[in-house]
Length: 128
Image: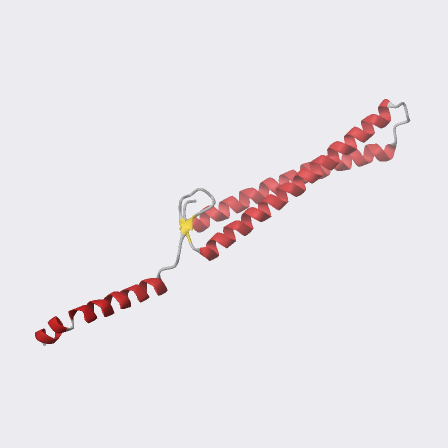
């Protein structure tokens, strides 16, 4: 038996290395560092989830910026109307108050959603 092993040593080593390489290629998935700065290694599916979460957060913040810009333009338009000496309209006042309420309500919703997301992420990571 030892003679056969010595005679086929290269073939045996090649077979063992090939089997080990196949197991490694099949079992070990590629990983990269997380986008959230934690340094945790994540796979492709987890990276896609993080990217989707970041995109959703960015879309929420862009919508908030759009609301703020719309509110700012409403204030400027009403200020221009008042400065031109035209009578102040009750509709403009109601619209301004509704805009202020909407802005504060949306801001509080964004803040609470961000806090919930952060708490959920900490709970899922086991750091919270």
